[in-house]
Image 1 (cartoon, protein in one colour):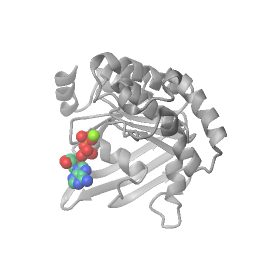
Image 2 (cartoon, rainbow, N blue to C red):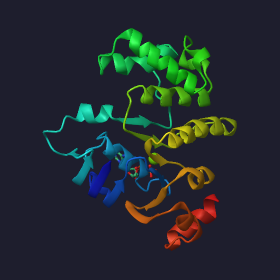
Image 3 (tube, protein in one colour):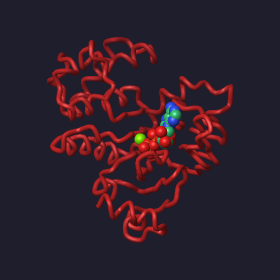
Image 4 (tube, rainbow, N blue to C red):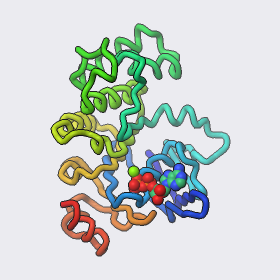
Length: 240
Ligand code: ADP
Ligand code: MG
């Protein structure tokens, strides 16, 4: 589905990504772990060109994202992204939050968009909140809405950047459950998370990023039980 080749990204003279090579197959669930500041978010943000790579290539569904002829808006519509801080539109109702992009970007009729949104809201267990506003929801509920909103565009791949890091502990589970269900439905996903139990459970593959490089890339069993680098062991000693 997506291939990243020798991706480099610098901010000024600070090289944040130092040659990332990565492939994600259709239906694969990739979990990205690593210390804070190692470049995890930058990798995700390059995948839908929220950041422009300094060099290297990203090929999504056969199209190079750095090719000037590629329609980036179209690519972005096929890649859903969920952030740590939900980014819901505060002055729109929950239903409007979910229908806005399909109506404006996909030119879907309001009726059709609402019908689809209602199905998605039922799926994340928040249909009864459809006429309320984001401020009336808990953090976990807001994040479930952010996921429904991303799914409303019918993306081929979903990117999650620490989707539970801003949540109170009791709300983490309800969000992870929604992501797990997506995994069971076969969605292709790249997930940055510090939830190691979740990573072990849902990942097909885990990569460990350290100082802008991938230093482990293997099954969760191998990465967690037999890490090849000292850095990875030190990280697990701190977080597990
Ligand atoms: P992670 O998600 O692993 O914590 P990030 O990808 O957010 O790491 O950041 C990697 C490094 O890049 C950090 O040192 C961060 O300060 C820097 N960085 C990220 N975005 C920017 C930016 N827009 N401008 C300058 N530096 C940035
Ligand atoms: Mg980050």
